[in-house]
Length: 301
Image (cartoon, rainbow, N blue to C red; front, side, top):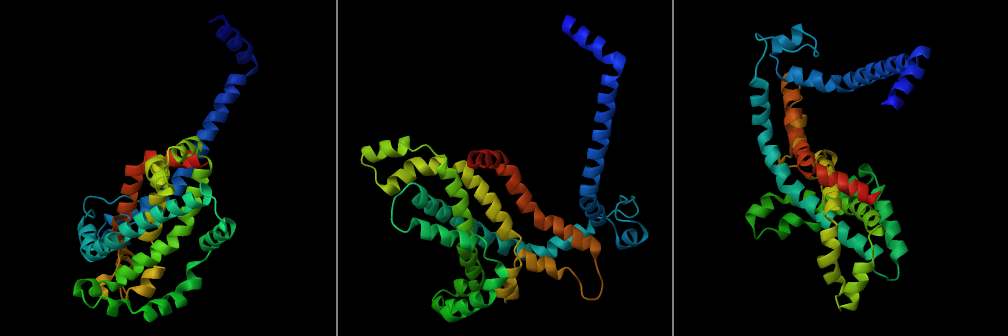
């Protein structure tokens, strides 16, 4: 108590506390201003999604809708146009995300915990795959799938043949996601203690048994990181979908969202509602795996 009184008595006369309060208030004002500036597009999109066409024309996007201009019709209309794309996206995004994370984990395990020739060369190939832009592989990718003729190979199963666009998209995103997943898992495994692995080797466990019983359970936080990252990347992809998906019945959500942009009239309220509906699954993934995501990021650092 005496110490507090002494500090207060020393600081108050020369204005130290007053300067601190002023600096803190100024800092808060700047932070609030930056947050408002950063969130203004999101706020404008949300208010637009709840307005009628007349309300959007007669007000600015940042002004909330009044009762006479408030409507849920844009959300109903957007969901009706997107529901087919949402279902198609789920059918290929989930397997592509899980498979790329699993294969990336196995590859990173082999690159960090096993000794074999050519590790450095394989690692360089994975690094090159991380930095390979989508645009550079579009033409060879289309030619590759045309050469494979997957639809003919699946002719024995009509249901799969009809969904061949989504199957090609699943395999493509799985292959394209393995390099970045491998690099993420490799950083995580380099910090993993080898004592348990050495003990398992002494007990006679083989490489796959060590991965199954020791490495995989310890990798769950990093799996959360890679699953969130991959799900977001694959869900929001439009470029591969435009190249590989030609059947309208197989359109994914980004293609359906792109079609909300009308050729004759811009339905901004429907487009904004559709954008929020399309973003909802990725937000849910972050909410569900948020704690594991933070643990994985911390463990990999």
